[in-house]
Length: 63
Image (cartoon, rainbow, N blue to C red; front, side, top):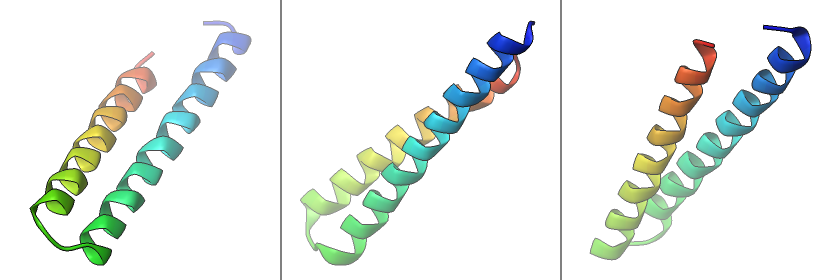
């Protein structure tokens, strides 16, 4: 793979990692600041989305 493509993939991986971290932060904040079933479900959904982004990131690292 040429260096230009490697650089673009690395940039995408960094962006995905940042998105996953932000989703995790929001998920944790929802769990701490709000109470009720809705907040638990929302936090769980955000955590699942973060996990999905991380899976994509790991797959991109294999390239």
